[in-house]
Length: 316
Image (cartoon, rainbow, N blue to C red; front, side, top):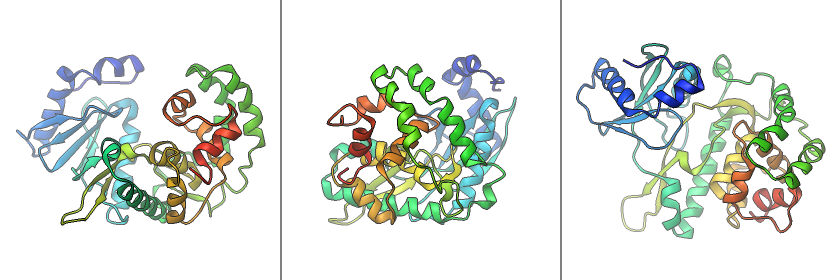
């Protein structure tokens, strides 16, 4: 029912088109014993994802991204029931037609934390940040060896080398002004990644640990406050330096809101140098510094050192 998707052009034509996607999703649901269940497509995300009734979520991966689907299914199964916050239970995963891969999982309760955040009082924000930090610490403490066959990058130092070589070009393509580009090479050369590949720093990484991938809801009862109810989206998971996950924490969880990163690191149990975290921001697979500069508070002066302190420093 779904056509093969192996190129960016095919992806752009097929994946957003519900006239093409929905019949395939309905057919697959019928094969999985969920015929007739209401399908509601989630508007966000790079992959087609559908709520299937009240209990399930179906995530589809075209042939070009089938390995991501395999990784997500394996990671979710590996971490099931082992974190302080629920993660979706996998009910089925496998090949569909024309190279498509699917993962059928639980639909978790709660609201996208990024949507709920603006209306939450400070006490709830602090509680949720603490819970998020405890969840990330638990994820990083898990044995990642059983996932080494499906998660990269393998050689962390080689990965950093590849990311460093293309860093300037990627940010230039995204429209970073020359005043910032001129600082990048010198900044990256000055940051020490010593120990980044050591066994003590290697961990199972979410890589996009952000409000958009956390669910939350008010706890039952009077005065219960908001609590985390889910952690989602493990398709881009990796094995590497634990500090790499703090890019998402600083940019998308604490977002330079005073005191929140300090609270997060206390609950997590470790801090990392701000310059290291900004370096990882520049080297991240999905790095887009011009976007971050538009979204987050500006530093007191237009330098990468000032930016590191503003977004990842002790006061953040």
